[in-house]
Length: 217
Image 1 (cartoon, rainbow, N blue to C red):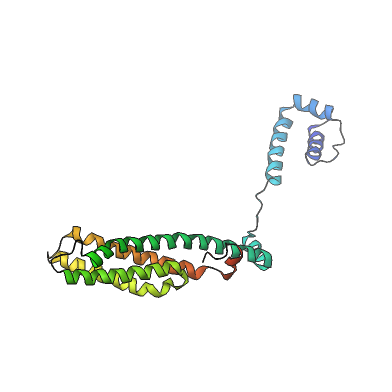
Image 2: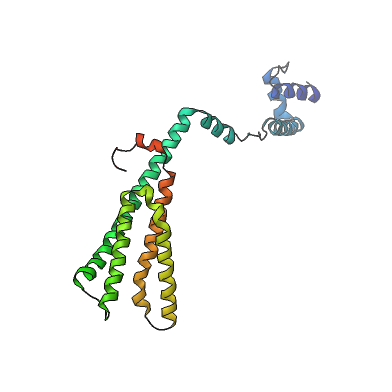
């Protein structure tokens, strides 16, 4: 067979067609003809480049999400999952707010009732302790009824801002020391906890009642 006929047959074999020639004849020719071997190597390379192409895969994310959202059961399950997650976060924040309130009561009640640790002006100290007790009771109520926590947020933030501002002024005027004002950071922390509790409470779907124990708020 001539090289032209061999190459036609090899091309047909590469394309999966009948080469019209025995394989032994073609392979025997390749062993003796370097030109046809080189031609076959190039032909195989071209064939691979043609057949192996990068496929454009469409982004189906939006379509899949839309299909999930359109499924009432899937949408309800997603709402339940989010509500359960929010419920768990709310429980943690309730505990944190309650602990902060108890700590504030533990500091204020001895001053109010027994005058322990009062400064040179006992009356002013007891007035401040009374204010702290009232604020702590507000935090307890917020922890007990977290859906109403948002109502206490403005009071907590105004207190935190005023305490922080007056502390900065007094420290700048050398009328007090920084170590004496660190305790006011508790008011800032309490305000942040209260804000977070009110925020997460607003996110809880009413359907959460179906996935959390009844009577646990």
